[in-house]
Length: 511
Image (cartoon, one colour):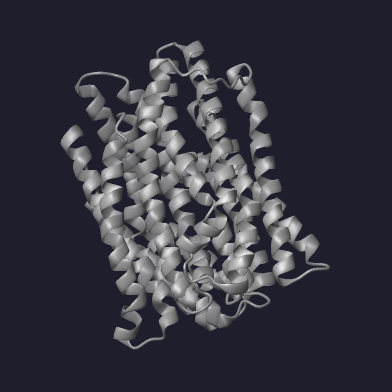
């Protein structure tokens, strides 16, 4: 259900990106300014939103409900809602006031009209991001009650608001004037995303009663665990914003190219990494509430099973981005002012990101295991180390590597994502070692991987040959991508991989 909700929101999100690409292109001031305007306020959403709030709230809330303390769980939910609302009001106000300084620090390559446009867009979008953070509180409550679909499908309305606003305004506006309406659409969508979740949350809690009372031990634990989780996300955001700043130093279009590539390569991370990690967090938290050796045994078994699920879907995603990324980019973005040359730059950026895709998705799962154990500090330490190594590596790969290999500077975005992938493998290795020390050996299914990688390579190779035979165009690209998925699943069925049987049972085909 998590994956279904994410898939719905991401499909509409891809339509949103195609609309934005159609009207603003990639190598334009409007495209770069809008990309920066979405990225800068999102620091609030990443520091206080879904992943961080879930890491601190869900384990405590779930454990209270698992031990029959439902009233205390409801009081905890109200206290967290009240504290979050006050924090967002203050931080949004500060963000709006400090926008020019934030632009100079986080997008140092911006100047002139591009800088002024970005400042205006950020100030519009900031309040909407505050509302999105509040919707993350709804997600934490819904996930704790195993109501997964609505919270992850809610961003559909945010995306739709941006699409409708942009298309409607485009009938009479263009360029910088149009992009302002796109920004207002994001604020309208943020309000709608919060509103669609509140009725179900209110029913589950017996009403929504925000409060600033925070004397209970459970509230204190949420706050204490929140800080390392927020810092962990914070250091990752430092890396993301440094990447954006480095991209801003590349020729015009670098920031937009990086943003467009992120839309595609974060899709498998969300569908197959975040969905499994999010679904496992309440279960892992319930298991961790027990005692004795059975806790470690149960956690190891859940992690091993979830890791196999991640691998089954992410291995073909890695191969697909590297070999067929150009087809995916053309389907989503190539329209209007977005050219085939723009597609090639996005494809190269995707190929660089594919190197660390498996590590990043497994890292999400291992983070959830640490959070279930009440440990938000270890993920923070390893994320910090990843950033400390990744920033200089990314700087070298983006600014110096293109010249060293004799290609144009604009291809530096591929080096940037490659460096991030290598740093991601370091973080994954450290997270896994930490869990092994606490729980014992966690099985890694080498035999499964020995079948998945050759299968994905063969399927991608055949799909690429099909694309060459069919020629250019939207329909041939869609057919070739669909063929890749069909070939992979068919091969997996012929090899007798257990995930295929599970999928068939889920959709009734095995009955």
